[in-house]
Length: 390
Image 1: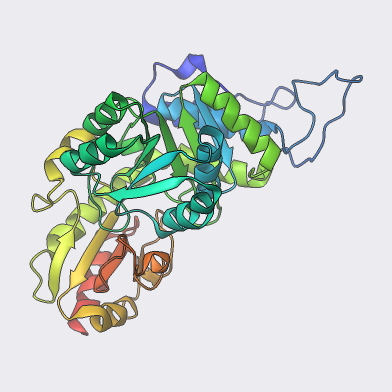
Image 2 (image 1 turned 135 degrees about the vertical axis):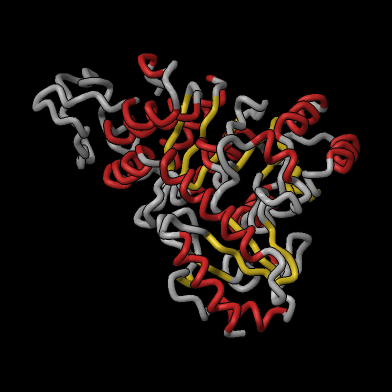
């Protein structure tokens, strides 16, 4: 669904609250209702009320979220899916065919690599891997053989590498490739890949957009009407759609996204600065630190903060990392990220176990922190006591 034109010129936080949120015509309810129905009465054969016939194909609650997210992103279209991986799958299967090629960053979510290597490669799609932060390396790969899609995460998961979206999109387009950005870590509050030249954006809406660790979802955001038609066809044909209740939860989360992400970012920057230089830490990875190799690009490309994710490498190796993640009290040992509560995990054994032994393998002394919106004093004290216990 197209973004609501009435709110196109307003600022992001306003669009997030008002776009698609018209009061209910019958009752005046300020919050649009949840349409928990699988089917809709027709006024005659093919005479649909508002275009609704069956909730796999279209549902009013899902339409509200699509309108809201497209408005927040400043895009023509947003398409909600049942998970972030479903969004990746639908976008790529809509635009690729056997024999095509993907150029993948060498630091991405383990589930993305698993999907591409175990599903798309057997289907006949070639996957090549490169450090996408290195423009010369990207150019070299693009010049060797035709690439159809360049896939970027920035900040990447879990090493928080920063890719220059504008420069990479220009390079991809020079060689006839499209650029897709997984913007999950930054969210549309901090980063706008379509404005920087990307052709499509994907999200795990489970993370910052949902924001409360109570819903699983994904989304594709884009401007190209032809690709949009292909994506929505496959969304309906394959059926990877969120339920009305999931759509409503994600809509509710998106309304407070701006406020939450800025708090996540402020807390993460404070914590990263605090632990940098700790005697038990080998390296702190956070794009808001001047020591981060991608800091200058992030400062230009990310607006209003650097996100809520921090990765740290411990000097005493894997066992220290595994011990550390079990010693925190406020940070909960769990997979996922982007919720209001702080989480901690060991990527090599958890979220990125599927890339073990590949070019995407992550250091085994790495710990990933999803910094929540609790009191920063409590979060800092929790990390300090966990480090002191090692």
